[in-house]
Image 1: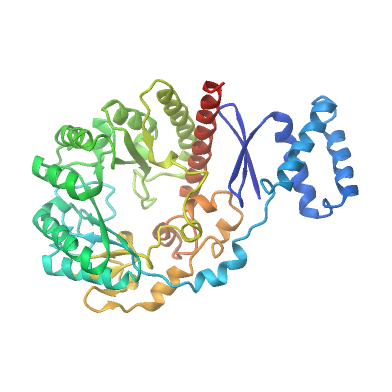
Image 2 (image 1 turned 30 degrees about the vertical axis):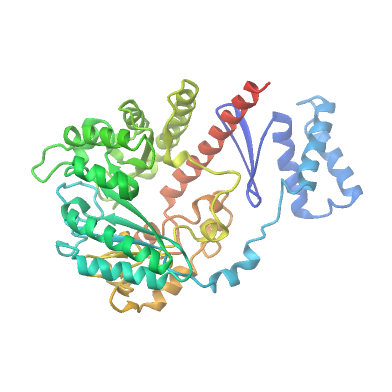
Length: 471
């Protein structure tokens, strides 16, 4: 499978199965689909078949390009094919049976340390921290059992991850600190290493919290939507006032204290700010270098929910943002935008490429009272209750459903060029929109495909500049 597209003056060709990316001229760009069509019919391994295709290609492009250019382009395309860099076979699907039966271990927990919050964000899927249930703070005892469960369920895996999540985790800060200390005490005797992370809205962020986080938290996610009017419209406090003025100076201080590394300011854009690239630029202008601004996923009945008719505007925003980030990089004030970060040389392992985040298998969410769910977005949906930290996973059928969920079980993914980058998308979004974890959230897919195209284009642009600087 080959995906071709034009972006910001570049002709980009992605060989989906190998991951090879080629930036080509117009002639090669137009030759490639002709060769791909013939390859699908077979016969090109024979010299006579290649000769016929060469003649057919020359005739089809006659008058558009000089004959010599077409001849050279054809040779270049055939050379890429012979080297296994173009029109490669899918080597993964044949292993899917073995993939489904693979042994999995739990390697990450999302600890809902607080089902309570001091903000009243309009788009909150957690219902102001309650997860449509009851307000409660996780006790130290439940948290300890969660870490014990993780260690016991992690097999031979050494590196384990725990995210302190909410609601708002800082409303239960002492328990967070106590659990970090307990986790550290488990490391040496169990040959494990914990990587703790924290997600916070920043209202309760203090110097003491920053100092502890800088010492113990591998990453910190700071929630802010961008411009003041955008943020305060969707992220008010319980009294209706805005949160922007309170959190911005705290977030700036934390980002600087971490040397602009190992954190993200993380925002959500809605139908109220379809010009979300302006929010990314605003956050960059505030001095943040690690930025994630993501599309809201909401009930279509909500006035802030994204609609299909918004997609062209959003795609144009991503294109505009990509150009802006290239320019900032050239000017020496570059930032990392999460959705444009892509590894074209290594990238995720095969399991992650096929099945994504590992929800329901390698990654679980824990409620304040110890119940286990496939991830934080399934919490409160009783049909996905998988067990608890005291008894372990009892919902083996649920785990098997998630274990079998991959890009080949989703019809919308099988022929999508983005499948090995998005890994089939979010299971929760699929379920919430279609009642099935093996479907896909269509609007989200369109945006994801554009983000991948932009990410590859940025790589191409920066690689071209680096090449020119070395001449």
